Image 1 (cartoon, helix red, strand yellow):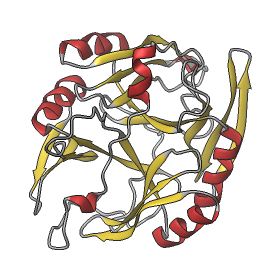
Image 2 (cartoon, one colour):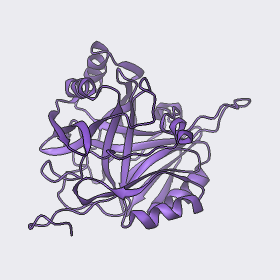
Image 3 (tube, helix red, strand yellow):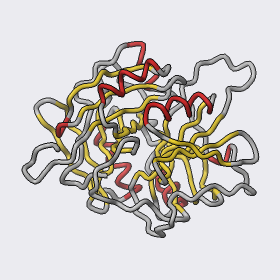
Image 4 (cartoon, helix red, strand yellow):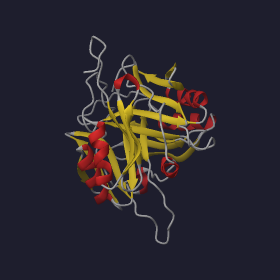
Length: 319
């Protein structure tokens, strides 16, 4: 994860979204861990070995609820190099995505109910660290958010809650039993999460809401080629940007989080997406700080970003 002085930037100033992609950007299917993990289940810790150190405001994990786990494994494994560890649970199926020995994401298989013919695109759910899940849920409610799933313990993992911010952006907050992954200035490698952004209709209001919850330091940033955006910082590291909704989305569209994965070559990775059954929503293009980005979907419709970001050298040039 980049430090505040070298973050990959508040992306999305040049999104060109086809109308057919709008519904995908506003997908709504996500589930809490407790929908499949019961009290008797013991899930793997977020970090092993444990750090026992919490970093409130850091986005530490991501989860995807999908209708077909086998297809998801094939897509993400081939595209990003993720490997998978199946975790026994009392109902349904759950798998942990790995880069080497590091846990990067959770996959929940949840087939649509019988007779449900509605198209519900799954959504990547970011997990944000907090030192008190219960306090955060009360604060979110006080400042206009909605507690979609009240705080509860997930054995082995921690205490979580799922919140919708006042503009509809959905995220999970977690107090990890094992602590949070340590920050590092080491550049991210292929398959690691590299950046997060919130797309919302009133970025200033949204930034203020998240500051109330996580104590972020907020920096406003604007350049001639892009609208005003806000950088959320904690522990001297940039955690995310808050961006206006991209052109093409309705003004009253709900907010949504967008997660980006580091790849070695955005162009080559984007070419593989349709071959594996996904779609390219936003073609590869140069973004801030010499980063290349694209926005794609998996075969089930879950939207995520891919980014090719190079840490600046001492001379200020990309490696």
